[in-house]
Length: 194
Image (cartoon, rainbow, N blue to C red; front, side, top):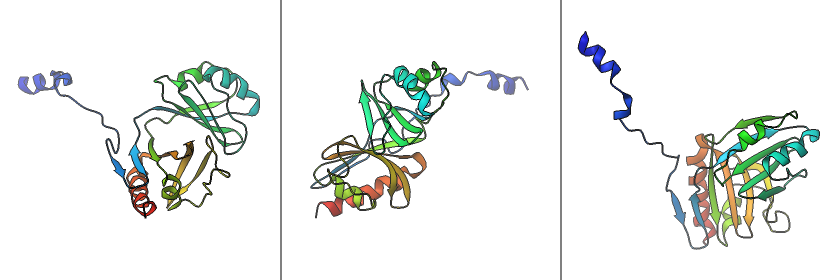
């Protein structure tokens, strides 16, 4: 009995646990496109009425966009318009947008979704063709310019798509669908190279 009690009180610190992001280190390179998993970042799913947008914009340090298919970025933080009262806020600068939202007394709902999502970068001259292998959205520069963002589908999965440059996209998807999305984009990149 004494030995069993001693085992229970042994500190767990002696064992090491390493948290690895889903798909860590995976990438695919084809002739006209590169598909790679982006590093983890902080994300917030934000819902708020129009009357609260100014206070939230001030707290977040980036103006929340108010038109469909738009985004705004400042200081490593990007806000993507997903609906009339909905945004995805992504912080790549190591700050905490959820804590910033908590300081705002105006009506809103902010939920941390950092561990729910995975981001995949699709870059190169074949980036749009790669995504269009499974996404029906018109990704021409005229219809989907740099900074455009939307919630759409890729194959059978919902994604959030952001155009970061003329030949670059950020694909956000839920972690549970990340292997499917990465594999779909990898296959699409091979087709785009043809």
